[in-house]
Image (cartoon, rainbow, N blue to C red; front, side, top):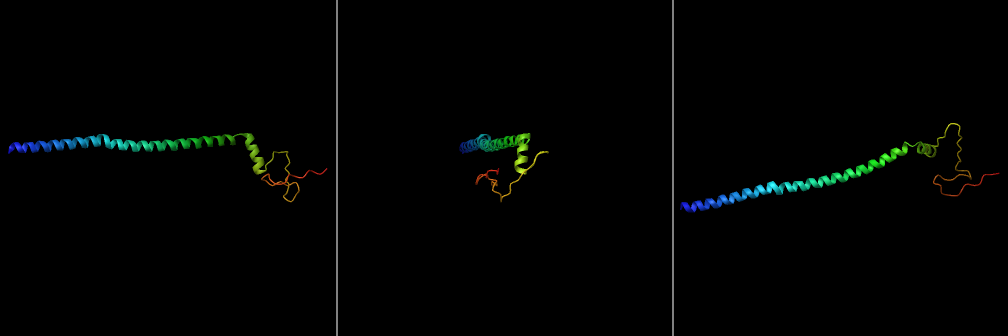
Length: 115
């Protein structure tokens, strides 16, 4: 009877050791691999966002570069705000005039100047 108990005990111990080893393999290799994959996905997402932000940053730097150009600022001041330099004269053709061209540039061409 003692021999039967030791066989059962050995089987139980072997089963317990197998379960412990299986749990160790799972927590040592399988579980961290899942976390690694999740972190890798997050890293790829963050890298995509970084690339998008770098493209936006380059576009903004190009815009800043344009606004630092005196030629661009002069053109912007004249076309958008109607500013002139000292000593220059500004003429405006009113909408009722035959010389008037709508701001979109479409429509009839201006009439020839008299004379």
